[in-house]
Amino acid sequence: MYTTLHTYLTDNILTITINRPDKLNALNKTVMAELDEVVSEVYVNKEIKGAILTGAGPKAFVAGADITEFQGLSAEEGQALAERGQEIFDRIESAAKPIIAAVNGFALGGGCELAMACHFRLCTPNARFGQPEVNLGLIPGYGGTQRLTRIVGKAKAIELMLTGRMVDAQEALQLRLVNYIIEPDELLTKAREILSIIGEKAPLAVARIIECANIAETDGLGDGFAFEQEAFGECFGTADMKEGTAAFLEKRKPHFSGK
Ligand code: COA
Image (cartoon, rainbow, N blue to C red; front, side):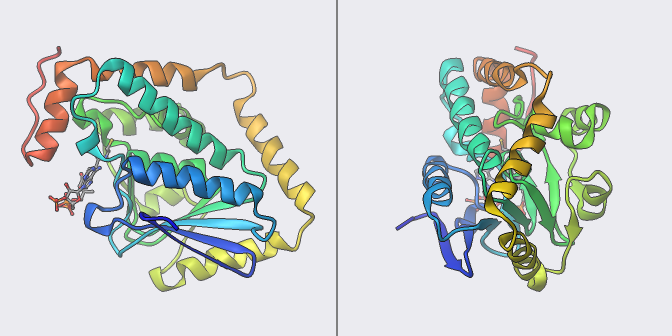
């Protein structure tokens, strides 16, 4: 049914595995379209009481948006990309059923943003979180500037986004980016255990708790997400973004000119 996702439903829990391990599960257009579809499935399928999002292979949850698809995009196309990404991730956050990220390795850029859109996160000891877009002459565009700031606080979020530094599992736990660190062979079992506890609760109460927690976070903050879309798009109009993405794909250091 999906080409880049593997899904299976057992005991009312849908496990969704992003399956492009040779590209560290980078989010290309197909993955995004299929994530959109699978989120709709979580919304409408009454058999599903909760979902787990994870990545295929031992190395990565998701290493970011697919950088090969960034090349040649205009500012408007960049903004549209952010709008679409934000929309899908917002539907994850707004789901009436819990969606947990089981982070089994790198969660970078769009991968960190995807994990942060989930209701909470578990990770393995080898997990690495980060927003390295600045290295590409870019900014996070799938909600990361907003969600990272809300989760870890402004000072830490700004430090991490400006340096592009990755944090390991222990630091992620300290920063409250993850709820638990779990050994790889226990990761999905732990996620299922938590979801099966939630699965016994009243669905309406579960839905309302998620909704209220989302409102608590957004209340009074203004539309930072719309601002992020615009700023992300602007980066696509710069020479530095073209240089940054080309340098990544050519496996060399970028030389930024400020243009
Ligand atoms: N987009 C497209 N391709 C990606 C990717 C991404 N975000 N992240 C990794 N890949 C690809 C690599 O290009 C490589 O492909 P190749 O085998 O065809 O050359 C493959 O996945 C394996 O990655 P590689 O870089 O060789 O693994 P590594 O162990 O040396 O490094 C990372 C791992 C995560 C540190 C490195 O891949 C990386 O920095 N990725 C980009 C992270 C990023 O900037 N994300 C934000 C994007 S907005």
